[in-house]
Length: 292
Length: 292
Image (tube, rainbow over all chains, first blue to last red; front, side, top):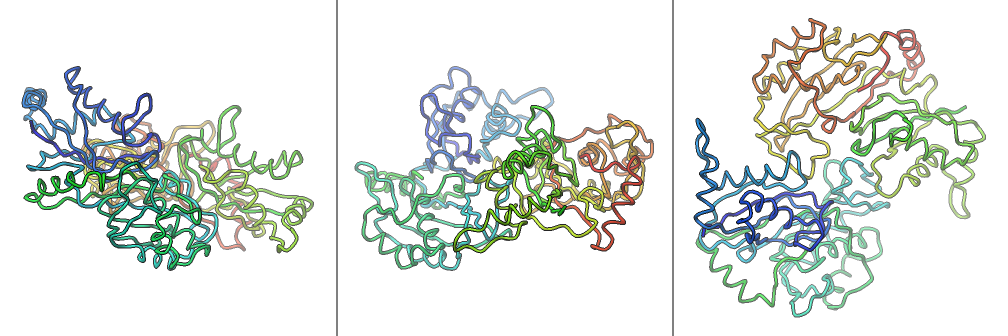
């Protein structure tokens, strides 16, 4: 089998999240169906493994997945591209073109790159960190109808300096149970590697959040907590205190999915990919991946 | 009567253009209905006059319109905002808040500012120029699903230096009949004040186009002509030649509306507003405004 890494971008607005679900339009379902269409009936059974299982409405510019192809399918891809007078494409390029061809002219999900994966690569288990961005317009920036698909709205002015201070105070290895939707048998211990707030050139509030992995609705809870700080309902000091209470709280709300985008997934150097995947699998019940 | 200037932004995707049409969702219809909702039944008859009558699917971040309110309605606006313990808002601010309140939480059309208009102001006839932007992704930039609502797509690489040279060669006072959808009794003579192409930080091709006014589908024809240059089908020199032939041509296509945004409308200093409006009205059959 040959493993291919797929880099993927999507507008989450029209999807019920990443994971395939019966009778719902999902990113995984749409992409796997496009792969099936390329290989015909024998393509059934090809599955995508993903780095970040994004929730309904969440976007991605830097999602990563992998799939495995038997030698016969790789050969078919290479043959199919060989037309009189045209140079054959490598299988990875052929896969990119043909899957995107099925997806359409300007679709809401798109494969941005296909590469033959290095030995030991696993899109989910080799990943060492995920980075998300949250866009939030407030009374300072105003609303822009042209970016409303990717931007949440808060009708009052927010203090970005307080939000940034609060965000930075949460960084580190902690139990984030207070910021997670609980899931049976899964740990909520995570390493929050980076969390900061700023305003961009249009005055829109931008959060950058990076962690080894996230539990369910964690980024949107972390954003909601900082919004409560930005409007003066909580002090920056309250956020680590609430975190260490390990209990979910009504002191802040989970923010809407529309503002959230998975922007990047980090992997180690090629020679460490397999070791990392082994390590993550061993801790599987501890840190069961990424469910934002 | 008091005249108010409204600054307006919209995502054109869900609208059949600016101008009110029976049984179609239009920007003018949506905004006028929101104004009616604020004033109740007696609000019927309040009409918006607009600077740029954008076509179906065209966006705006800097659209300008005006409406006139009788003293009684102005007084009602000011009264309605007076609540115990709250300061009364000026009528312009009350109008902004209440119309946007009707439009919803994060609507596809939004009033960004309301100001009492200076004497002699007419959103349409006082305007001295309109500026549009066109966003075009090509094989160099790639497609981004998150910005596809505001970006057209060309599947091959385009040469932006040639496109920019071609664009600049069209600037000046000319008859743009070759770049306009014709309209009975209306002139196609326009002053193209500025037209240039560049790539932004994401590699997306951006056209800036400014003219005293545009005739119907003129910006999208000007863009299509430069795309033909960018892919090598036409030379930059061909564009002024085609323009001066004064005949519509199949040498280039009119590009899709999704990439087009009205970004700014220019007005003269306050003391020249009335004179400018008078001048434009006098030439009305010559340059009947802006129909992009």
